[in-house]
Image 1 (cartoon, rainbow, N blue to C red):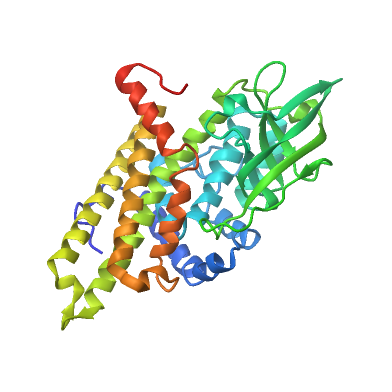
Image 2 (image 1 turned 180 degrees about the vertical axis):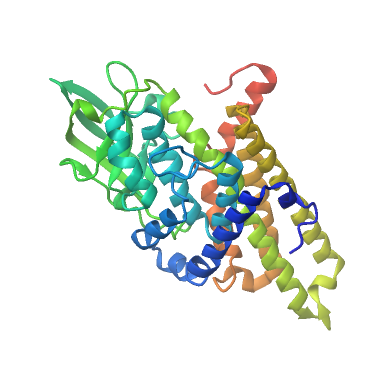
Length: 384
């Protein structure tokens, strides 16, 4: 499909190479199988992680420790192409790099960085991020998971929920209340007292591992604490990194739905002509393209701000709110163009549409990002 606004002309040669490399990987290794993975509710993470690592996609925006050290736009382009395959694939890469590797890279000790980051960049170790709890999603400051000092050790108790990669992870970055404020802990999942049952019966993000985490008198040494941060600033900075990937990723999902709808409209014949020749169908496709292109412009602009060191959390909220909503609207419109075929996994549309229902909610609900923008406009907080 033509890039009518020629947005990708603004990419550098290196960024276009990353685009083409990831697109080829998704075409060869993901698209022929992801419909079956979605139907069977499985994701072959251990099989795919080394391949993703060999492409430099895990922690690709981090410097050192065998990470690729790319710029923000390159990371965004990769997320776009990954999510054109499936939101579960982009989520895996996003959680690994932005939620598990980033806090270790940004706030960890030299020992923590050396122990985990090279292995995670290679895909030989998988990470997860434990913040959300059963009763505290949008209000993480009131989390109940607690770490208490016991001599030089820490004793961790509590639970987390909706954790991508949880039951396959080798290491969990867990955020907990302490007597000195919220702290992050690097928790090897082999530690006694750690358990991570997988969450089943999902109708969204089925090609993704989602788990609960439980900590039952889990003993950690002092060296498990992330020394570089105290308070909510730590986990929220990680979420900003991951949300940036979402802003780009959903453009890929929207584009995949639009491409499927255009292809179908040109070949599906009713009343002796392709349905793409009808004005109502063309109007849908035109608005779908407008939404996709506008989302792409937003992602590119925010990526350039990030590379210039000027990106603010409220701008990330704008991008997440606008682009996820646009992508979900495009997926729903595509579903109508495909008619009954739109609900089958022979086409990607219903899979993307269902996945986007989760993306709308995770890493900041639509409501929370709306309130962030409302506060930015009025100067008045409306969270409580």
